[in-house]
Image 1 (tube, rainbow, N blue to C red):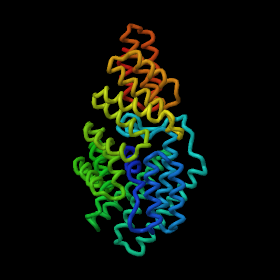
Image 2: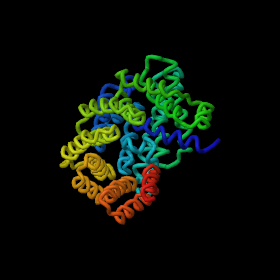
Image 3: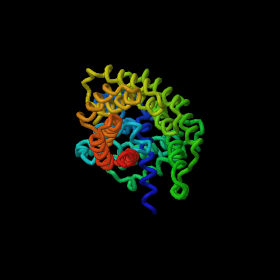
Image 4: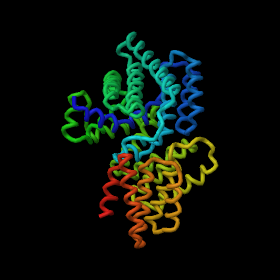
Length: 399
């Protein structure tokens, strides 16, 4: 098999797990475990990751046979790894940046082992339930969700998209089975719809290989299925809404993305990244004033937040607000923000794009030597972080 196919498919569909793996179930667990899982899920989306990990452990203690509790624990552990790597934003999944900064440390052996133990248990419990009743939609759902998480972990943490392909295909097949057994289960449409969307935007030769491998396609159908999952009101409604934010940004349907972000800001007021994404989406939409407002509000609101930050989170926020201020013609304020972004730890592509904006300002002021220095730094930094769009723009400006 051509190795390019699974790598592109799985990397593009990493968002499936980002937006669906915390979904819980109403059927398999006792009431105490169910309530604890709901609380743990809310804690994850409020960025209270350590609390979420503890809560999911409580859910497991309340019902050791609850597959979703083990999957929730695995999710909180995986997200703690990606959080530290700084690749949890829309920017990472709309085609600009596709690999982590090489300087990022691998996960601790203890965290990786705990993740695998929890996920293996979730998969084993789901398979045992399927052995007892092969036509049980909930068991198929639980197995598919766990396999989707396994695929995303392998792709994002182990760095093996090819190794993740089998789990990704199985996740798709299991949730298609759910929809076949019970068409009312629109929560299962999230993973199926997301993979359909991803396949639809691949190049034709790769798309044909996806069909042969068992994946379906159809962009409009895929989006519609995810929208159905969001409207279904099931346990993964919020996950579907996060997925839609990503897809609406990619499709340049910014008003729809901002509507979802508004709803989620109300539900999860402790999630700093929702203010960041609101600003980023506004910037992509050409609304620099709104972008500056959202980003400034986020920086002010969470200035005293003592919880750990995503790797490079503050650098990202200052880079984005600095970019918005460049557009607004507020050069002095923009330079101040961009200088802060460079001074803070961050992804190479963020520092590279910051240098790109500073280079444009230097060029505008007639300082060509400084502009060249910034553009050359952009090429170096963004090449290291696979940001080809910024590299090409800097090279054109160097000419």
